[in-house]
Length: 449
Image 1: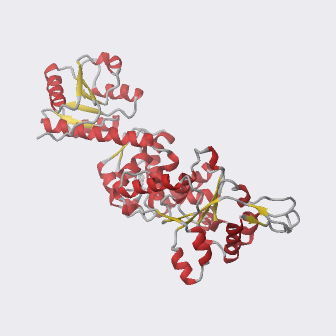
Image 2: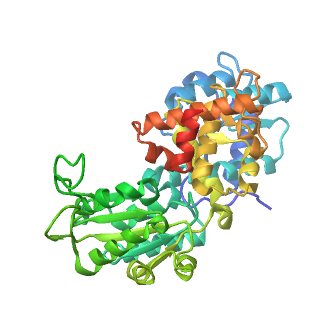
Image 3: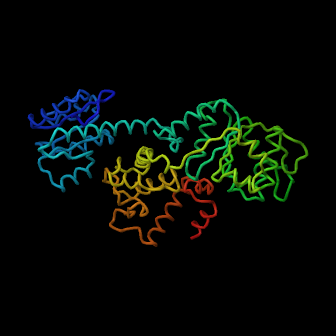
């Protein structure tokens, strides 16, 4: 019974093998499934020409005259770092297998081999191709909404349904589930008629400044107000205002926001006249607004005004089937960003990722993958378990033989990571805190340490 599943589209295999009988055996096994096409290259010197048309998988012998399998891998990686290469060799030793993987091999097939072994590799390579294509097609801004689970398919369908309306939306979800990304998707940035998208982290604005920042102010309204300031609500006029962590909004601001939503007009601090304000409001909360309303900590009338459409984003632990796809997406992104060769996860690393609870959800997964990619030795094609954070069973290995799971070393790695994220955000501490899945005060404390 064949292990490999029929391909839905052509899958081309190139066999680089100087022994014609071995090449014929592999070719026969590949084509016996009826789903794959195979061609043979006896002389590896013709490799460049054989790579056009581009194959989906390459089998190469390890020991060949003129050019060995390691050189084949190197040349292929120069042209296409993602093209999977399987090394076939009678010299089946652990040393050769490790060398082949470090050189970028997708898999290792020892002679003599059974047809089932080849079929398993074919099926694995086909799944890998499908995964890479899904990742390549994904919009980087919607990475947190990526997933094949039924839950995430329903989320994307819901967003496409409500996007044309300008109705207020409340997004509920734990920290790191992608609430702002969902808000941007609802806004529809690609629609030129959608207007501006203005994002505000309510919890990051000091209460004493919140009214002036949101509603604007007139010159002379208070000490230091040397000019008129439009305010964030005015900036969102004609577009979308996204209020993240709306559960942290002070009671006085809740009343003022309710008035703006009811009258579509606002009055700046120090102003004497109302100004038109028309925007679509999307709010996000990581706490239950129902519970806050029951406790009297959030206005019931405002709650009903912002909760016309409701979207719940599931935590990552409720959609574990998406972890592999998300991890692969982040791996590809950060391998390119940090110029690393790792393009796939070691099986034990993937198992550790899939077994984790992820209290920080997709954002925590992304941070873990980026850290691992940075720490991965440059020559490694496969991300090993060792470089994952200690909480996932790794050691945060630095590539120099030094473990970073001692308190001092781990603190140093964390400090450097925080400063790197801050550099990428151009010094924007609120954005850095969001990317790191920590609150603003915690970020300030880490910077001061």
